[in-house]
Image (tube, rainbow, N blue to C red; front, top):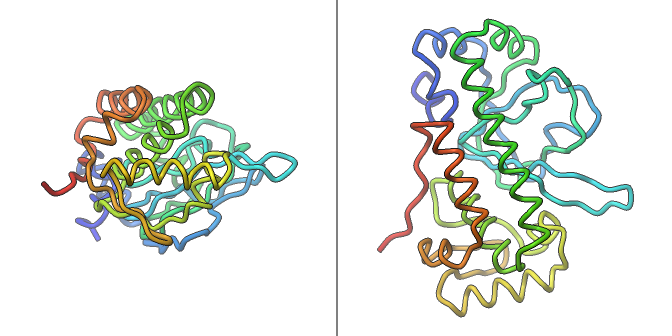
Length: 242
């Protein structure tokens, strides 16, 4: 387990002494597709550190409409409101790509944060990077085409997986982006025609990452630069085979 927790970039970035102390409190967990880690307004009981899973942070409107505001994978932590003092949040956390991770009880998370050492500094830097992702997602959804939004979403997802294949339906992507399913089908069709991706029911494979980056808007690059600046040594993104 000592080596396995390094699959999460935040846990890997902890100094050895801090990581050793955390080790006895971290609990390995399976994160199945669709699992709700917390609901809006509910008090959080655990913080989650995905290793092979991806979690979507989603805003749900009164009429049931949904929009993803950020994604968290092996780069970070689900549950920043615990140590930011809120204990709950207005968003829902849902597993969008099944996998594994670790969780830490809320009380232990607060105890570690309140030590005001390297862990606190690391978690605050991650929170700033996450806020950047949220802000840039809002800008992207308002000002950029659906093709560009889909490219951004695919690239951010790939950065948090060790594969060029995403197990996700177009209907789920539409719900996360807050658009019609038909729009996602058309956008995916254009990316397929350009040789950037292939897709079959429930699976999208990225063939040309560099091409996706060229086709994306500046929002992906803004988010990636901020993560790289604030979180040195984070897990490298997956490179598509030549």
